[in-house]
Image 1 (tube, rainbow, N blue to C red):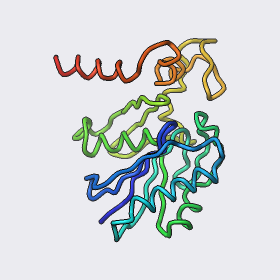
Image 2: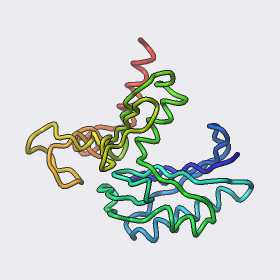
Image 3: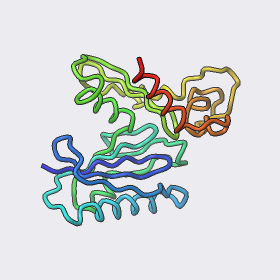
Image 4: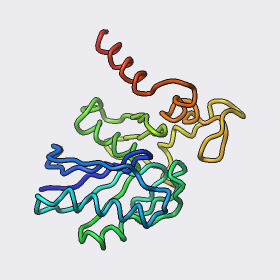
Amino acid sequence: MLTIGVDLGGTNLAAGIVDNGKILHKMSVATNFKEGAGALIADIARLCNELTADFENIVSIGIGCPGIVNPKEGILVKAPNLGLFNIEISQPLSRLLNLPVFIENDANCAALGEHSRGAAKGAVSSITVTLGTGVGGGIIIDGKIYSGPFFGAGEIGHHVIVVGGEACNCGRRGCWEAYASANALKKQGFSPRTIFKDAKTNEAAK
């Protein structure tokens, strides 16, 4: 059973053909969000079509989106880093690709992946922190994603850690994301790639 997994990031749009957790083929392009939701949806559809040129029997598509996501309605409610609000994703893509399309917060997807196959495998409950264009978080309780009544329970990157601090794309000031995301580190003169590489090297040396 083959599925398509799509990662809608603030910098890159990546997609892969997945067979029981194993990635068979993947592609990526720069995320084109400045031209609006219609152009972004068209780019996702185009990438999926190119990806599946040599594959058949794709049964569904799952998309990890940044920000607050309503998976029940297939709506991207709020993605400040992309400047997108209340955008229907699932239905338009499903019509274009003639496949069922499901969306979820990207950090929630990462948390579920870590819980089922990664560092949190075997744990009843866990929290995963993602670092990229923003800072995200996913919460797993009793093996299931916990997103809260308004789908934002894991948005730990927008917890205020410095009252009146740096401006954040969400409209508030002092959010964790404004200090620890890749964009924030660049503004501070650091290289995120170097920092993450050094962190992995130090961890391996322990």
